[in-house]
Structure formats: structure tokens, C-alpha cells
Length: 625
Ligand code: ADP
Image (cartoon, rainbow, N blue to C red; front, side, top):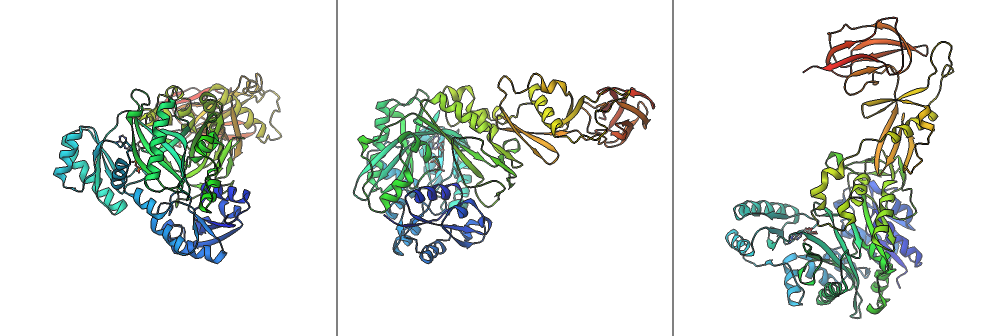
């Protein structure tokens, strides 16, 4: 067994590998770029080596620097993680040539599976069913069009060198083929430096089923059952589970058997994944599952397999790379329960899933479930790398319970001010079709509007926010002091430009949290972040006199009981946003109330000197059109 290991990666996967290595008594060496100087993976390793500037192509993708770092620190082996150099056969060979142990398959196996067309051809030879389509050398547009016509629409054009969901075009009709081909080629040339394509039948109701395989250097290959990764957004996996819902024993045997044949066909060593696409229109059937591609590395979603099999896949990788025999035979492996993983991203679903970068002021996963992450509190999400913050993994006896617990876990994640997809994940996990396992890869696309929608806060949520804000509010000596004035018993709170006046009494009894309102909250710069079902709500104590105390419809409410000391506009007058409407005196202070938008004073209900109650409509402004 190797005694020291360099991890040529960053983030959660580097941390994940380090954890197992440490448990096995292996010394760990991290590598890092400028941006990752203080990252969790650097802090977790026994030693760390700086390998260059922040952009990956100047650091994590520079093979020589990584090998030099291994040499300099005396690391015996290199684990590539996923992404970066993990499927780079040249790098694997360079590692081996440098006399180091490569924790991965033989370079020849990587090459054999690297291009989609060559891989498919090999699989056909090995008797593995592949998606019907055209793989030929003749790349003339006419020939490709003729093949597509023969396959029948819809078809999928795929870059042979493609990956990560890039370089694919779905074509619905023969008339559209030529144009899609041109644009697919252009993307393939610029992204992969290879504009060759293959044509596949577009599978309707497609489900993504993949099989974890493992080989050793003694010729043994086993599978560790399947995963279902059908919940995807734009071909990127979002939620993965194992086993696949609706997989019967016969079908499982067929697909897992095909996966083992596929791995054997390329002399596979180490952890690998055979991806299949299934036509799920009538459930999973052995004759409707086809090979798509092989990933010659550990997958992001490997934890769900670990959970149901009880195998530490990283440990197996290290053992196999050190020349050991696979720790278990096929008949010693079995499925125990159900596991599901959700990928938490720093992105804002409401803004087209734009990455949300910045410092994680607050980061609390708030759960005892398995969390794989590469960041800690007050770390920064940068623009340089993948915006994945963490993976949450739940393992329970059955699928329903697994979903319930995973939904609970993602719903309680506390992250701010960086935005996340937690609310989106929660909505997906609690969607009826997902619960019924009625999901194909089009599920998110079809339901995106519903899934990204952040519901308006419930009455209870407002009350809860008011209670928390009022208990944190710094009362001035005059607060609560009453002579003739009514007791100050309400509080105006705002959320995204709307405001409500809440009776404080109603915030405490009955307790807004009774009856199972599941929330977490914390104070942040002048307000309260409340997380409910993964969605973040930023409630603010309404600052008096800032003119925020308006409803969206332009009704200017009195934020508290007081006296109008001046009225600065007349009924019917045109006003501009921010213009002073009147001044209220309350709690011995003056508060100017201003116009929320350009408009007309449609109603003026008070005059100077009037005593007003809280929430009285003082002025009504209507929008100018
Ligand atoms: P990449 O290498 O870019 O990940 P894949 O070939 O693995 O590309 O395909 C990615 C995803 O595209 C699959 O998970 C599946 O959702 C969809 N897909 C691929 N091939 C087909 C097909 N023939 N029909 C329908 N969907 C497909």
C-alpha cells in the first residue's frame, strides 16, 4: 500500500479523498492555486504545494507542476479526483513515467473510451447494446443528413470528443438538420478542438442509468449496481439516487452485466462508470437500455453507491492502484436500502441560475446527514471554478423516507448572502412526479417555472420574522413609554420592497413555529435572514422615515402612531419617486414619508396636526402611466 498521496484536485473531491487516505494512514499532499491558498482542502491535507495562478489552465491543469509537486514532497501516488486531468491519458502516462502510482485506469483504457464514436464501436464488438445511430468516418453533411433521415427524427447530433453536456444538438425535423449540424460542429471545434460528430436516435422519455464498475490489475471486474441520474438540468446532473426506481432484478442483471462486459473490453482497472440511456416510456426494460459512454474516473455521485453497498470507493481505488485484489467478489456485494444525493450550487435560480459568487458569511448545513463539501464558513466562492458548494447525501431503508430526509436537509441549509439552489432542490424533491419516480431527463425543463419560484412568505413566516426582529431590535428609552399615545405594539417589517405592519402580540401567541413550521434564521446587516424550504427571505425592520413603509400599490401607511406635522403635497399633484409627501412625528422623532414611485397623489387623507394610528392610509399614490 502506498504511504503518501498527492491529490491533483480541489474542492469537495479533494477533501473526500483526503478523508479516506487519512483513515488509511496515508500521508496527504494537496495542491492549490492562488485563489485556493486558504481553501478547506489545503487546510485538510498534511502538506500543500502551490502550483500556480487561479485559472485552472495555469494551475490544476498543468501536469508538469503537479508531478513536480509530487516529486518534491515525496508523494508516491497521484489521485486525480474528477474533472481537471482525471481523464487525460497523457497525464496518466506522464505520472506513470515519473515512477509514481496513478490512481486510475491504464492510459490505454482512458483513450479507448475517450472518443464517443470509438467507444461505441468497441462496445458493439463486446456485445453491449448501444443507442441506434451512425458512427462512420464519412463526415460529409450529405451523408450525415441521409443517416439522420434513415434513423428517423428526432435525432441527437453529438460531438465525438464532447463531454459535460456540451456539443449536442437535438434535431426535430429533417429541414433543421443542416443548420444544427453547422452549429454543433462550430461548438465542438471551439470546445474540444475536434469537429467530428456522430448521430444518435433521440430517445424519448430518456432516463439516465449508470453502473459503477471496478476492476483490479488481476483481471477481476465487478459492478456495484446502478444509479439513476435522470434529474438533470441542461444535461447536468442535479439529484442522483441508487438503486434506480422501478429496476427489477432481471433488468438489473442485464444492464450491470453489460457494464461489466464493457469494462472488461477495455481491461479496466479502478473505479469507472458506464452510462446508459434508457427509454423509460414503459418502465425500465432490458431491451430498451443502451450504452452511452464510459467515465474513466470516480464520479461526483459516487457517494450514493457507497451508501447502499457499504463500500468506500476511494479506499478501493487506493488498494487497487497499490496492486491489491478487489476487496470483494461480486457475490459479496448487495444493495442495502436507498440513497440519494443533491448537488448544492452557488447559483441563483431566479436569475437564470447565474453563479452567485462571494463570501459565505454564513454557512451552516444544519444537518447530521452526510455532507461532502470543499468550503467552510467565511470561505469564498470564486468565479474560477465550478460553483458547487456541497453534496448532501441521505441513506434510508426506502425511497420515500430518503426523499423526506433529503428534502428536510436541503430545506434547512443556512447560507447567506451567496444564493443557492437549495429552494429549487427542495421543490424538486417534493414534486409529485419525483415522489412517484415519474421522472425522465426532461423533468426539470418541463417544470422549471414551478421549481424556481420562491413562494410568498406565509402569515406564520411574517409573524416569526417580526418576533425575531422585535426581540433583536434596540429599543430606545422612549419605546413603550406611553402617556396619551397608544402603546407601541406593532412593528413594520419589510421584505423585498413590500412592507407589513405586524401586531407584536400576535407573534408570540400562538407560537408561529407551533404546528411544525420548519425555519432557521440568523441576523445579518440590519435584518434577519429566514430560511424556509431552502428559500432565503431577508426581512428588515422597517427603518422609520425612509419612505419604505409603503405597500406596492402605493398606499402610504403610518408606520406607527403619531402626529402629522407637515403635508408637502396636494391631492392631484404629480410627484416623483423619493419626493417628500409628509412628515410624521412619532416617538419624539420626525419621519419623512416619500413617494415610492413616480405618480399622482390620488388621495390625501390627512392634514397637518392630525393624530394618526398605526397603519392608517395617509396618502395614496397611483402610478403615472
Ligand atoms: P456528455 O459526455 O456531454 O455528458 P452524454 O453522451 O453523456 O454527454 O449525454 C449527456 C446527457 O444527454 C445524457 O445524460 C442524456 O440526458 C442526454 N442524452 C444523451 N444521448 C441521448 C439520446 N440519444 N437521446 C436522448 N437523450 C440523450
